[in-house]
Image (cartoon, rainbow, N blue to C red):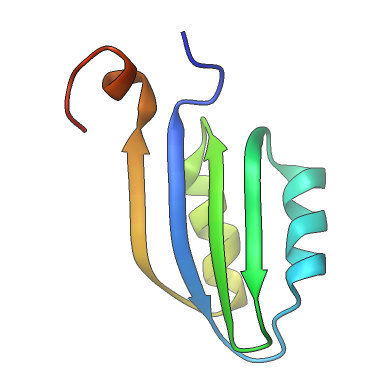
Length: 83
């Protein structure tokens, strides 16, 4: 069984985005692993494994416009299923 089953990926487009502040918020407020929060002040790419992707989406949407959202169930993939 996978500890964090949802691979959550998205882009945040906004102004004055701070990848370090976003990283720190994730580490202090969400349970998960494999966090990548990289980009610049206008565009941040997020990659995170979690069991609560809706919380990630809600937070990221508070920072700017979110798009290119991908949420994959890695447990289904590990079990040989799609999705």
